[in-house]
Length: 283
Ligand SMILES: NC(=O)C1=CN([C@@H]2O[C@H](COP(=O)(O)OP(=O)(O)OC[C@H]3O[C@@H](n4cnc5c(N)ncnc54)[C@H](OP(=O)(O)O)[C@@H]3O)[C@@H](O)[C@H]2O)C=CC1
Ligand SMILES: Nc1nc(=O)c2c([nH]1)NC[C@@H]1CN(c3ccc(C(=O)N[C@@H](CCC(=O)O)C(=O)O)cc3)C=[N+]21
Image (tube, rainbow, N blue to C red; front, top):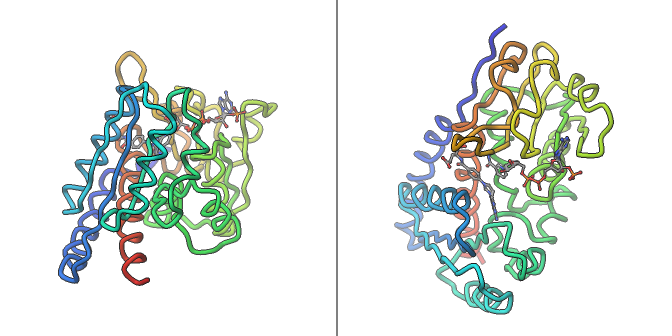
């Protein structure tokens, strides 16, 4: 069997086209959604995603600012900048690229962002809202995965979703989001014993470990839907956590890297920023 490839990139283009129209309509009402992305330091991979976010915002006609701060920026300075952005009525979404340099406490920074501008959905109050099934900003990568599955007509109800990963950024929130969609969810992580025994049980396998080639065809059963979240640079080339070739022989559907989950993450970030702009103007 050869898997159907789900191209997030294509779907992202379609959704961004829809959003472009929405941004134009909001503009007529005097609402101009604006995202501010903050990056601290010069990690080349981070720089590349951040540029992708900038390009995507501009293409749909959304305002977007990039604040590039030096690697030695103090926590105090960053918190001060966030406070100003919280108070700035022209700013609807704030994203601080993670991880931050070691002198800065990631969690403190996340908690400093006004929850109504927290387009990443990482603030504890938004995490709590997700857990209790209330309206909130869904974290962009989990939300992108949900939309990909929905648009590929893959139902979630009663399905066994196995997730490799339990980070606050991806693993935990994707589990929660799909649990809310009535999936049965299992999380695996670095202490899981006999990983393969778990991954073979999956109807839908989501891999977010950050380990190139961790999952191969041998780890999955025939007909599994495989979502590869990993973004690893190996010999200068971008690759996922799943060995695409061997896995596609078993999977019913599979996402590639690049052109899979990554472009959907950026799309949901734009979606959340538009949502934030609409909320603020409703108040
Ligand atoms: N495409 C996209 O839009 C995005 C892609 N990413 C990519 O997704 C990947 C994961 O990101 P993130 O969640 O932030 O990473 P983290 O490093 O924070 O988390 C990795 C998770 O994988 C688990 N893990 C690591 N190694 C193994 C192993 N050998 N077996 C089983 N579990 C393992 C860890 O377990 P433990 O908790 O025990 O340490 C942890 O829960 C990265 O490659 C990242 O670049 C991230 C965000 C967005
Ligand atoms: N506060 C915060 N929010 C994040 O959402 C966040 C973060 N910090 N830190 C880092 C991770 C990683 N991440 C990616 C987003 C898009 C691609 C993406 O679009 N990738 C393209 C390729 C891009 C390239 O060529 O470099 C693709 O997969 O096709 C990848 C990775 C968001 N993250």
